[in-house]
Image (cartoon, rainbow, N blue to C red):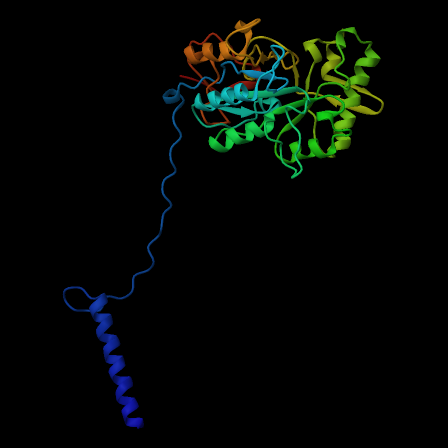
Length: 343
């Protein structure tokens, strides 16, 4: 029995050698020793498009769009129907716009792909037509935030972000903890719109401070750790001392804002432009192509930017560089320094 086992083992060894010779030999029949593992090099990264190829212009204009109520029954030029709002977002996505927050825009700290254009979506007053949570804790159907999320899901790259400027109570929720907490957790920016939507041009200095610092406190209490870095002036009106809109304190609360939003009627300058004034950022009212002052509304302005693409901000895809065509009429700000690339 042991002799038979030895014969079986010997036969298996001969077979293994034969298999190695068959698999690892060249034409001479010699066994080729194992080769070390070849180095697997990662594929070369896809090169970024050149600024020239996408006609980058990071000194161009940025549309900062202003929304109020989103309602099936619009009653003023400040109202949009859910269908019109969705259509405008679909247009922005189709025309290669990418939403950024007010603070991302004002600080220039946004990174969008080459050839794309930043757009800032802003919502004033904190109405429930803009945002409210349903029983499942999700943005309710038909609200602006729900529509924005749905459009973004259908268009990868169209960021579902916006800046919501709120009064007291925000979205009709006393304290605002649930709603403001959801917005903050999902990447939306919360901005100040004063406690009572006060016309700051008619208010005393003490009242201006109270209105702004009071809303600052409410937001901070609702969302501990949230930074409030932007304010939209009710009616677009500055206080007599314009500096108080962006910097001040009252009742133990200090505030400082990177941007102060007006009502406006035209696109805003690039944050890298010498014309950029963070204390006076113009906005464009969302509006269709007809109606009162439609020439200053979003439909008309988006048409103008589409027919004159060299006017709008077009990203070069490199957040560490500011690209613009040579001979352009817009001068860069001093902050650009040696990052400016002209072509």
